[in-house]
Length: 213
Image (spheres, rainbow, N blue to C red):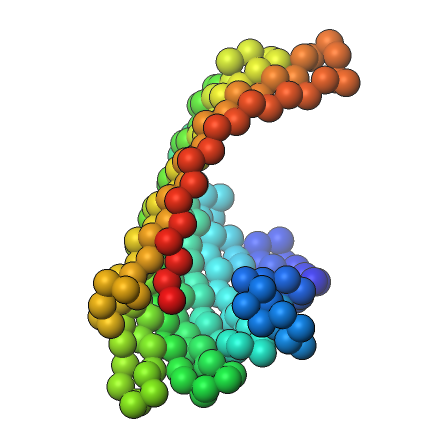
């Protein structure tokens, strides 16, 4: 990646990420170029000390799905303790095997709070995909995603950490094509201040994944 700052408020950037292992690679062992890459170009500017906006173009290229997505968002930090962000994504993806198009629209909102030993953040995202079928009709998939995490410092040497992620996906094709995802984590981290050779993390994870077809 690279970035350029024409002035102290504005940044222009471009990044490329290459994935060599994905879920599709497991389903298609030996397939060339399954991982694919993501090219992101964008501009971010600071309107004031508390507000910034960005505009991005994201292009994904892979043997199973390619397409261009337009993204824009705003970040607001009214105080040192509070932060908010909102974003939208609009684009079209193409199945490289069948030529079927997926028209995607998404919106997200998140908020964060931090004071003293406590840090909490939470977000919600809604996405709708209109997926082209073999008979050229379109099926709609609606997906909700909720995510949150927290960190609480008990002392200089210990802290509690946790997160909760939940997703629900429903398709107009029927219940068989629905999906669900839940991940809940609670942990205790211990790192003695006077002996940095010791690091310990005790963590409990609840995980449920019901992927779509």
